[in-house]
Length: 199
Image 1 (cartoon, one colour):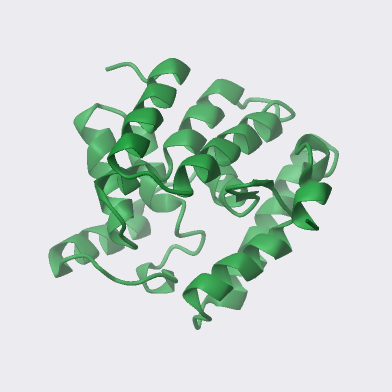
Image 2: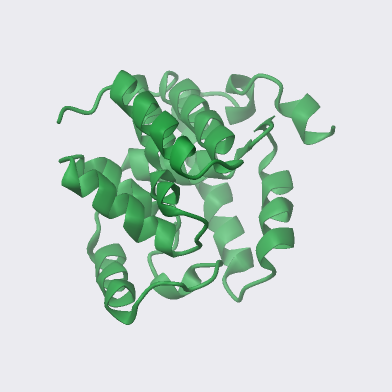
Protein backbone atom coordinates (compact mmCIF):
# COMPACT_ATOMS: atom_id res chain seq x y z
CA UNK A 1 0.00 0.00 0.00
CA UNK A 2 1.44 3.36 -0.99
CA UNK A 3 1.97 5.62 2.00
CA UNK A 4 0.44 9.02 1.33
CA UNK A 5 -0.40 11.93 3.58
CA UNK A 6 -4.09 11.07 3.42
CA UNK A 7 -3.50 7.41 4.31
CA UNK A 8 -1.23 8.37 7.20
CA UNK A 9 -3.86 10.76 8.58
CA UNK A 10 -6.59 8.13 8.25
CA UNK A 11 -4.33 5.58 9.95
CA UNK A 12 -3.81 7.93 12.89
CA UNK A 13 -7.55 8.57 13.20
CA UNK A 14 -8.29 4.83 13.28
CA UNK A 15 -5.53 4.22 15.81
CA UNK A 16 -6.92 6.95 18.06
CA UNK A 17 -10.32 5.28 18.02
CA UNK A 18 -8.67 2.04 19.16
CA UNK A 19 -6.72 3.74 21.97
CA UNK A 20 -7.66 7.39 22.54
CA UNK A 21 -5.12 9.49 24.38
CA UNK A 22 -2.85 12.54 24.37
CA UNK A 23 -0.45 10.66 22.06
CA UNK A 24 -2.84 11.49 19.20
CA UNK A 25 -2.44 15.28 19.45
CA UNK A 26 1.26 14.86 20.19
CA UNK A 27 1.63 12.89 16.94
CA UNK A 28 -0.07 15.63 14.95
CA UNK A 29 2.22 18.29 16.35
CA UNK A 30 5.27 16.12 15.69
CA UNK A 31 4.10 15.75 12.09
CA UNK A 32 3.68 19.51 11.61
CA UNK A 33 7.06 20.20 13.21
CA UNK A 34 8.66 17.68 10.85
CA UNK A 35 6.94 19.26 7.85
CA UNK A 36 7.83 22.82 8.83
CA UNK A 37 11.50 22.08 9.46
CA UNK A 38 11.87 19.88 6.36
CA UNK A 39 10.41 22.64 4.21
CA UNK A 40 13.51 24.72 5.06
CA UNK A 41 15.99 21.93 4.27
CA UNK A 42 17.23 21.17 0.80
CA UNK A 43 16.86 17.54 -0.33
CA UNK A 44 14.11 16.84 2.21
CA UNK A 45 10.50 16.13 1.25
CA UNK A 46 8.14 17.91 3.63
CA UNK A 47 5.28 15.51 2.87
CA UNK A 48 7.45 12.49 3.67
CA UNK A 49 8.61 14.20 6.83
CA UNK A 50 4.98 14.83 7.82
CA UNK A 51 4.00 11.21 7.19
CA UNK A 52 6.88 9.84 9.25
CA UNK A 53 6.08 12.24 12.05
CA UNK A 54 2.41 11.36 12.17
CA UNK A 55 3.13 7.62 12.28
CA UNK A 56 6.06 7.54 14.71
CA UNK A 57 3.86 6.50 17.67
CA UNK A 58 1.30 4.51 15.67
CA UNK A 59 2.07 1.42 17.78
CA UNK A 60 0.02 3.01 20.53
CA UNK A 61 -3.07 1.80 18.66
CA UNK A 62 -2.54 -1.51 20.50
CA UNK A 63 -3.12 -0.05 23.96
CA UNK A 64 -1.40 1.75 26.81
CA UNK A 65 2.17 0.45 26.68
CA UNK A 66 5.72 1.70 26.98
CA UNK A 67 8.54 0.08 25.01
CA UNK A 68 6.02 -2.26 23.38
CA UNK A 69 4.59 0.59 21.28
CA UNK A 70 7.86 0.67 19.34
CA UNK A 71 7.69 -2.93 18.13
CA UNK A 72 3.90 -2.74 17.65
CA UNK A 73 4.37 0.28 15.39
CA UNK A 74 7.19 -1.39 13.49
CA UNK A 75 5.07 -4.48 12.78
CA UNK A 76 2.03 -2.42 11.87
CA UNK A 77 4.00 -0.52 9.23
CA UNK A 78 5.95 -3.52 7.93
CA UNK A 79 2.66 -5.37 7.31
CA UNK A 80 1.64 -2.51 5.04
CA UNK A 81 4.97 -2.26 3.25
CA UNK A 82 5.96 1.04 4.89
CA UNK A 83 9.58 0.11 5.57
CA UNK A 84 10.99 3.54 6.45
CA UNK A 85 8.00 4.43 8.62
CA UNK A 86 8.52 1.09 10.39
CA UNK A 87 12.14 1.96 11.08
CA UNK A 88 11.17 5.33 12.53
CA UNK A 89 8.64 3.68 14.84
CA UNK A 90 11.70 2.19 16.55
CA UNK A 91 14.47 4.69 15.78
CA UNK A 92 12.63 7.70 17.19
CA UNK A 93 13.30 6.39 20.70
CA UNK A 94 17.00 5.73 20.15
CA UNK A 95 18.93 8.86 19.25
CA UNK A 96 21.68 6.89 20.99
CA UNK A 97 21.91 3.61 19.08
CA UNK A 98 21.83 1.42 22.16
CA UNK A 99 18.70 -0.40 23.34
CA UNK A 100 19.73 0.07 26.98
CA UNK A 101 19.15 3.84 26.68
CA UNK A 102 15.36 3.46 26.47
CA UNK A 103 13.92 5.58 29.29
CA UNK A 104 10.49 3.95 29.64
CA UNK A 105 9.35 0.64 31.03
CA UNK A 106 10.54 -2.56 29.39
CA UNK A 107 7.28 -4.38 28.64
CA UNK A 108 8.27 -6.59 25.70
CA UNK A 109 9.19 -10.29 25.57
CA UNK A 110 12.91 -11.07 25.49
CA UNK A 111 12.77 -12.07 21.82
CA UNK A 112 11.34 -8.66 20.89
CA UNK A 113 13.94 -6.94 23.05
CA UNK A 114 16.72 -8.86 21.31
CA UNK A 115 15.25 -8.06 17.89
CA UNK A 116 15.11 -4.34 18.64
CA UNK A 117 18.63 -4.38 20.06
CA UNK A 118 19.96 -5.84 16.81
CA UNK A 119 17.73 -3.62 14.70
CA UNK A 120 18.82 -0.38 16.37
CA UNK A 121 22.48 -1.35 16.21
CA UNK A 122 22.32 -2.17 12.49
CA UNK A 123 19.90 0.53 11.32
CA UNK A 124 21.27 3.27 9.09
CA UNK A 125 19.78 6.56 10.22
CA UNK A 126 19.15 9.37 7.76
CA UNK A 127 17.82 12.90 8.13
CA UNK A 128 14.24 11.66 8.53
CA UNK A 129 15.19 9.53 11.55
CA UNK A 130 17.01 12.49 13.09
CA UNK A 131 14.15 14.86 12.26
CA UNK A 132 11.53 12.71 13.99
CA UNK A 133 13.82 12.27 17.01
CA UNK A 134 14.10 16.05 17.22
CA UNK A 135 10.43 16.82 16.62
CA UNK A 136 9.32 14.20 19.14
CA UNK A 137 11.09 16.43 21.67
CA UNK A 138 9.44 19.62 20.36
CA UNK A 139 5.80 18.61 20.69
CA UNK A 140 3.47 18.37 23.64
CA UNK A 141 -0.17 17.35 23.10
CA UNK A 142 -1.00 21.05 23.51
CA UNK A 143 1.43 22.34 20.88
CA UNK A 144 5.05 23.07 20.13
CA UNK A 145 7.46 23.74 22.99
CA UNK A 146 11.07 24.47 23.79
CA UNK A 147 13.19 21.32 23.96
CA UNK A 148 13.97 21.96 27.61
CA UNK A 149 10.28 21.96 28.54
CA UNK A 150 9.77 18.61 26.84
CA UNK A 151 12.90 17.23 28.52
CA UNK A 152 11.40 18.10 31.91
CA UNK A 153 7.95 16.81 30.93
CA UNK A 154 9.37 13.39 29.98
CA UNK A 155 11.62 13.22 33.03
CA UNK A 156 8.72 13.97 35.38
CA UNK A 157 6.73 11.13 33.82
CA UNK A 158 9.50 8.54 33.48
CA UNK A 159 12.08 9.60 36.05
CA UNK A 160 15.79 9.93 35.49
CA UNK A 161 17.81 7.28 33.66
CA UNK A 162 21.57 6.79 33.37
CA UNK A 163 21.27 7.91 29.73
CA UNK A 164 19.01 10.93 30.34
CA UNK A 165 21.64 13.66 30.12
CA UNK A 166 23.40 12.03 27.17
CA UNK A 167 20.08 11.79 25.33
CA UNK A 168 19.54 15.50 25.93
CA UNK A 169 23.01 16.28 24.58
CA UNK A 170 22.43 14.23 21.43
CA UNK A 171 19.03 15.86 20.85
CA UNK A 172 20.56 19.32 21.23
CA UNK A 173 23.21 18.26 18.71
CA UNK A 174 20.48 17.25 16.26
CA UNK A 175 18.88 20.67 16.78
CA UNK A 176 22.17 22.36 15.87
CA UNK A 177 22.53 20.09 12.82
CA UNK A 178 19.15 21.13 11.42
CA UNK A 179 19.64 24.79 12.24
CA UNK A 180 22.82 24.77 10.15
CA UNK A 181 20.88 23.20 7.27
CA UNK A 182 18.06 25.72 7.65
CA UNK A 183 20.09 28.84 8.30
CA UNK A 184 17.78 29.83 11.13
CA UNK A 185 16.44 28.66 14.47
CA UNK A 186 14.11 25.66 14.45
CA UNK A 187 11.79 27.71 16.63
CA UNK A 188 11.22 30.13 13.76
CA UNK A 189 9.20 27.32 12.14
CA UNK A 190 7.04 26.42 15.14
CA UNK A 191 4.06 28.75 15.58
CA UNK A 192 3.07 29.39 19.20
CA UNK A 193 6.17 27.74 20.65
CA UNK A 194 6.86 30.54 23.14
CA UNK A 195 3.25 30.86 24.29
CA UNK A 196 2.86 27.10 24.70
CA UNK A 197 6.18 26.74 26.50
CA UNK A 198 5.31 29.31 29.13
CA UNK A 199 1.61 28.74 29.62
